Length: 189
Length: 277
Image (cartoon, rainbow over all chains, first blue to last red; front, side, top):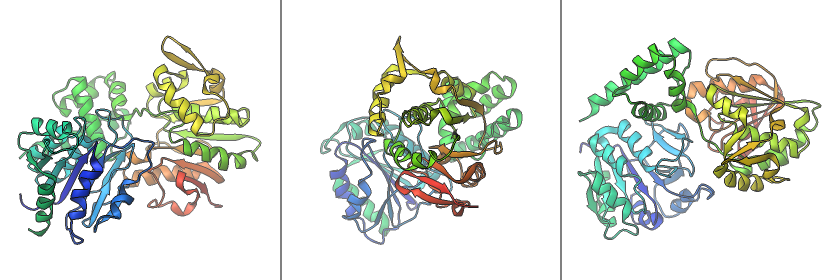
């Protein structure tokens, strides 16, 4: 790939442990913005950004409507809203109905990001107990981007990465540490 | 790879939205594009068209296609008392100010199928304000307005509505306001006896009344920045001085050109107050 412009990550059951192996590994000067969607119940206030800010060297924040996507940041989609990427590389939120029972939906983030970033996007599907993200990861690969999924054998909940690997033939299965190392490497190449 | 294909699709979407505006005056041209594209893809698939151009052809030549397309482009499924903290703040912080007016006008902008309107009507009845209040419930989708005016909702949604109502500080039981029959909950028509339902567009229409309170939640996120500014300008011009504006939990006026016309009244619930002019 010709240099990544953005990374999108989707995770569900077991997300916090899995993301804790990846996000803290990224260095302070990491040049690629990271957008993360995690399935959390709508009545849970948005605790993910503060939780990870305490562990990360990048700035971790909740994504805001119409906010520009910038390097040096990790953005978490807010609960009960979909997070989308616009062609002008800003983010927008939507209260459209859940997709595959999920809001935020990983598919919605990945498909819109694939539209906006094309071949310069990296998509990563982590642990989860449903099939959200599989169609999204396929869209990332179809646009020429890099598609990665956590190795289902080692995942806390294998269903989500398994579904992604099944639907997206180009996706590579990797351990969490290998994903972290790959993403760190993207930032130095 | 598929980049060329995507570009054709983007051209088609642009032309379709232009056609919808020029032929029927429904203006989605300044909606946030990613979301519109997603909704149009859904419409194209479910209405059975192989391309957006084919859908455009049908829309231009068959007016009956318009309401069907509108249902994909506009309908929001909301809940009654969605974000209970918002309604609690309205009840505890805004209502004491509203009590000082002998008569009230409240505008529910982008009311869709009426869940939020009914929430306000119930809250106002509980607070003894309903009889002196006129509600304007507006939307661009006539089908959604019909549902709002009927006050009929699927019974399986009532459990969530009831929980929200209780968490919002509800002083009565939600079941006081509806009768259940055949899997549907029919809300008391007296809740809607002082409601004007009206087709109004925040994109193309003007100010139509003066209000003490405007609630417009999860509508602005679908607009691009200039259109958000237009809508907020309408709200500013529609509010009495010291009137209130409630937005969705992820919406704010920070980047709006009209931010200086408002103060934050309940910051965490996105309730603003119009400054003295």
